[in-house]
Amino acid sequence: MTTVREAFYEVARRLGMTTIFGNPGSTEETMLKEFPADFRYVLALQEAPAVAMADGYAQRTGRAALVNLHTAAGIGNAMGNIESAWYNRAPIVVTAGQQTREMMLIEPYLTNTAPLDLPKPYVKWAYEPARPEDVPAALMRAYAMAMQPPCGPVFLSLPMDDMDKEATVPEIRMIGRRLGADPHYMKNLIDALNSAKSPVLVLGGAVDQSDGWDDGIRLAERLRCKVWAAPLEGRPGFPETHPAFQGSLPAAIGPLCERLQGHDVIVVIGAPVFRYYPYVAGDYIPKGARLFHITDDPNEAGRAPVGESILADPGRACAVLADWVDVPDREVPPERVRSAPARPEEMITPDWLYATINKVRPADSVVIQESMSSLKALRERIPTSHSRSFFSMAGGVLGYGLPAAIGVALAERDEKTNRKVVDIIGDGAANYVIQALWTAVQHKLNILFVVPRNCAYNILKSFANQLSTPGVPGLDLPGLDFVALATGYGCPAERIADVAALEDALRQGMNKEGPHLIEVAVDPTVPDLL
Image (cartoon, rainbow, N blue to C red; front, side, top):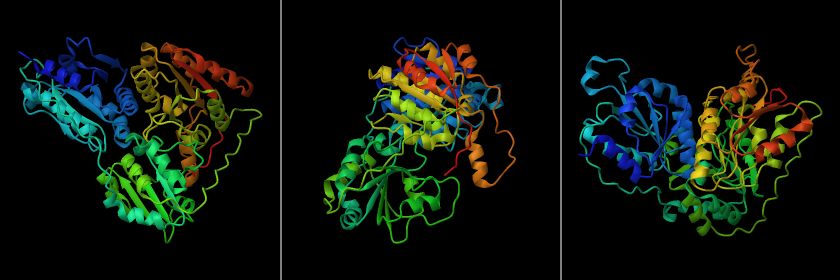
């Protein structure tokens, strides 16, 4: 007899999901007993890090990842990073145990009373199988839903008494992961680009996710136009070292419109139109300009406030456009001049820290970031030049960057690329998931954690200044010691406050094997939000 448990693992095995990120509870132990020798369980010390690890792993590999959570309590703990996975378009299959079917009517201890509602709206599909024997096929469907564009998290609630019942292994189906990009349906856009005097591209992370990195470059060079990064994206869609790259657009209506002045055709590919915060009034786009939006997400197309939306694969669309648009009779736009970082006289500034990190890091290193108050400086000083080399969260929930780096580092090892992972995480964000350091230590992952220590939630102070809300409490973070915290989890750590010592410490940190943390005391000056 094949049990539900055995059939579940066989489906996961055939789909390539043999790594499970999780934090187990009693309702999951029936699924995890006799754990298969060819599977790997990556233990997180809390559910939120488990989801972020799976997110980083799935984004880096491009394959779905399995997550194991503990009934309603675990889902509640994990919801912030489930939301991040939703906005990051990370294909993860989240499973959680459920109480025994025989007792669910009387709602015993640890019952998930609303299993299909609890993870919404941040899952593409949620299901609790009607019969035990449906569990393996439910996993097959969950995988299909997670991988179809746009990718995203899905959820399965699995009653704990199902696992020893009889089941069969369902047919393993191949899932088409790409939409088309028919030039016939992009004719208006092609005609507009061919007649444009000053077109501009705005590229988002879905271009990279759909393997369009090189075709995005080809399109920009064909059009001889400027390229902006869409605001508040979790990963780049275009090399930030390319001469056409202009930086990231501001995430506010009026200022964003001002940056696009002078362009008559605006083409947004693989990003929403647009992610805004805070509210600053203005026109969405310059008067007289036309905007075209290419996305594989119908919801994203539906909520765009302006322009003509086209449902198509972002990466494939870049390739088709590069093949079909005419070569224009105009000069290549001049390369943007980046200002040199100013060496500080006393305290290390975030700007100097990031410039120094970029100076000493390996050229092929992978950067994961969650240092929101100095994000503008970080993106300016640490430009991304390679595909799948920079990851962040697009949803705005803190507690992502530290464990996501662990998932990325595991993927680097599994993919045999073994690039150095550099995780830059603010002191406020790090404390949401500091226990993830333990997992990095247990797996001996090659990660340099850099914690810019400004002793505050400086991003909230920036918002307070922008919103004219003085006197907001709870924004200062005195008394934190990340060297002690890291050491307590077994991670070697050091503290740097001297400008002269920074470069050597970072260079040595880059060369260390295994996890290493550097806490850097930085200038706490509150930057402008926009």
